[in-house]
Length: 341
Image (cartoon, rainbow, N blue to C red; front, side, top):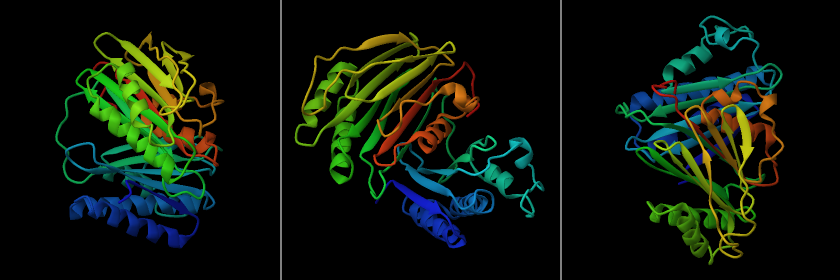
């Protein structure tokens, strides 16, 4: 079964179809009746909002969360409509600009275990919701908040760009891979990279990339970048092969981390890692070349303070190249006692 479903929302009939797909998607991973009901209401309200306020020009993406002991689902609604002039007011029950009772967005927020929104006037609306299949156990505070989003190329059902996250207490290691081209063979290369990355857990990231290179030899190969962040030492280590873009914000300034030229699995240069400071409040963005590298943080005030999943989704919506797969991974170092998300 696919771990992600993309639904275009253009007509009223798409609302019911999204609800049916979301319910079936969640039943397969063991959602109870109460959680299934929440998923159905959230999807219905988000899709109706696209129909009413965005000129039927939006998408809802459903992604299974299977990396934790309790399965869940991320629901991401994106549109290119007129946005909102006052988000806080729009979340209040009884407020509406479309002649409805005005309880939809507030209900979505209440029914979600995680909720965040970006809705700048004339720039569209993006909403993320996370719903767990059953009550989620309390987790120890993490020094990292992560979010990733991907979309396949136009006319493709599978995405050849993917990511993996490996966290051990205060240390986070992550991979972003862009399988060469797109379609099923690109996806096979990307999944081979993920498998190798996870099998080499605990090894230095240069060694992990070398092993990924060997694992991708039978495939068409791809571009790969690895990041390791140590919260105890406030250090970031990067190594990359191919055109995965890596940008990070440190103390308010943005920097680029270059990768070596090559194709993992086929053409490998001498691999060398680089180190940088990465402190609480800093933010890192990794993305494949399915996203234009010309995005400007100054044009999107406030977006990079939102949940990393919302940041990644909005970057995909606004700057993707439709002819290719795209994946964006965002990581923020948490401030001490930061429980915002």
